[in-house]
Amino acid sequence: MAVHTSGRSVTKAAGAHSARGPRRDSAPAGGPLRRALTTHWYAWTMVAPVVIVIGVIIGYPLVRGMYLSLTNANERNVERSIGVNHLPATYEFVGLDNYADALTGSQFLDTLGWTLVWTVSCVAATFGLGLALANILNRRIAGRSFYRMMLVLPWAVPGFVSVFAWRFLYNEDNGLLNKLLAGGGLGIDAVPWLNDPTWAKFSVIAVNVWLGVPFMMVALLGGLQSIPGELYEAAEMDGANAWQRFRHITMPGLRSVSTTVILLSTIWTFNMFPVIFLLTRGGPGEATQILVTQAYKFSFEINPRDFAQSSTWGVLILVLLMLFAAVYQRVLRKQGETW
Image 1 (tube, rainbow, N blue to C red):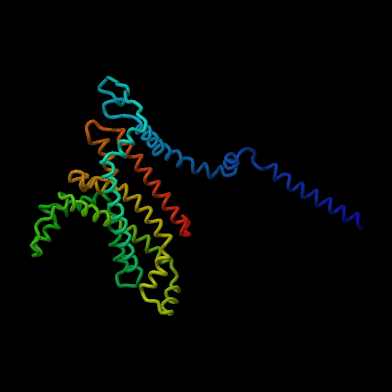
Image 2: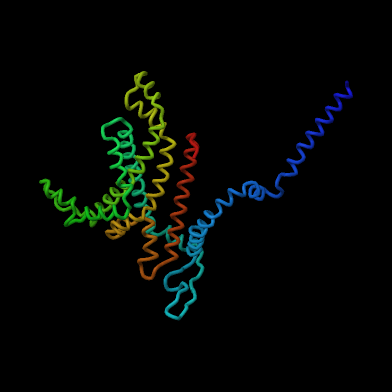
């Protein structure tokens, strides 16, 4: 009996050894990257075209821009062709001089200050209005589907069409807004919406908020509909008023959605080129110029075009947004949120 038991033990041990052996031998050899490529080759094949396209469209211009920001390249010393004559590049490497000039000069700091005011104002107003409209549309009201469609309309219309429509409304002489003010019996003179620095800043913020509210409203409305209704019913039975239910149920329930849409809205607004460029072109003067439009101006509008300075501002914009995203993510982690 003992011999029989021992034989079974030996047989089990041999079977276990033979079962483990092939699995160990079949494991892909090489480092982690090679094992990942061997195991998930199909997934890498599907992703490869996208990676290549992104590398060509985004990667090369980014690296090229970083390089130009370390030179004194402009329209007169870059490689170019004039007729049949080919002129080689003569720009020189200047290191971090462009960054030092930008960060110590008043132009970058002044533009950065207005860009921050523009971004914070637009994001705060967009989030507040989007949250209010989402709460209204989350209730059972007559014509709710129609209201949703109308409020999403600004998002469906191409951005440049919306901006040109607002530019017509803001026209000081023939614009609809001034016509309404003049015909309303209020005794208000024509408002220089786009010709006065203060009014121009207010005007571009209003247009950007109008364009951004639909996205914010739709995202927050989806978050509201994911909050269980039983929580509100229990809170109401416990005597919680509307403000307490909003503070302790609605806002915590929207935290994950809010953090994402605020981050996206901040990045989009910080780089919102079309609204500023098409509505005021940074004017009057430089009153509404933000960082991205000023970088465009360096590269395409001034004479000679300053590619080095434009690239420097572009790299600084990228660094600022990366720093904001890193700090934002760290704050969320301290609050127990994962992003």
